[in-house]
Amino acid sequence: MSGFGDELADLSAALRAVAEDAQVRGARDADPQPWNALAVEDRDAPVEAARRLEQVRLDLGDCQRCPLHRGRSQIVFGVGDPDADLVVCGEAPGYHEDQRGEPFVGPAGEMLDKMLRHVLGLERAEVYILNIVKCRPPKNRNPLPAEIDACMPFLQRQLQSLSPKVVLVLGAVAYRSLLRVEQGIKRNRGRWHQLGDIPVMPTFHPAYLLRQPGDKRLTFEDLKDVRRRYDALGGKRKTG
Image (cartoon, rainbow, N blue to C red; front, top):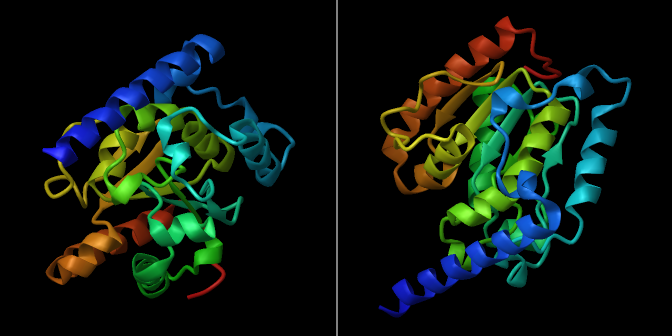
């Protein structure tokens, strides 16, 4: 019961924080825009993607828009090539990510690196990696809806700044949050979706594959499909 009570307390605090922030900053930051309503003018502006991302990071600041800031070591914004044609999206930082300030490090990160290198022919430095939320949830629990909503406007701006050719989504939480669906990942991995005009492929999270190695084969097939779409769209590759 104590764990359930703690989660209710977290949810209540998160909802209060987002409601208070919406009053100060306006409902736009607390209620993300539909993906198909996002402005795309910046994609054609004569400003480098790195500078656009830097502005998003500056606007995020020392974020205190939800209670997750209380337990974080640092914000985990994202890492990789700002001009990448492939974006990898996970759910939230874990312990190692919170300590280093970089998404997908530790055992799950090592597996992701192998997935990228051996199936997609890409190194970590050739893609851009980010998460749905930027701060580690306590005890690595799933991020709460209000926490996701607080981060979503910045995730939208990151993706708009990056303007990738393909997005690879890892895990059920990221899949449901990014595409705003209720279905689980098992029935929907390996199926292409659209995020505005960007094709999106959901598959299993590397941390899940460490626990369930029998599903690596399915993920391998998903990644081969990603590689075919990536190549067909003229995605950049320095290796392989």
